[in-house]
Image (cartoon, rainbow, N blue to C red):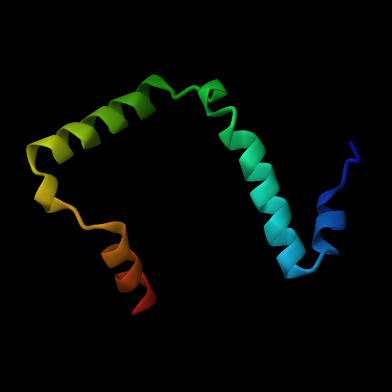
Length: 72
């Protein structure tokens, strides 16, 4: 495998850089089990999941959140 530096990546076109990021992400996603959450991160996830189970209507669907972000 050929290694590239950040400088090499910046020389790529934007679509090529996007593809590079997607390719890198895909290699991470297939090994997601290898990423360990800290005790604090696990606590936060558990709290948020518990809050969701207690009141699932309190949140907003991603599509609505995304529209609010774009409208700013």
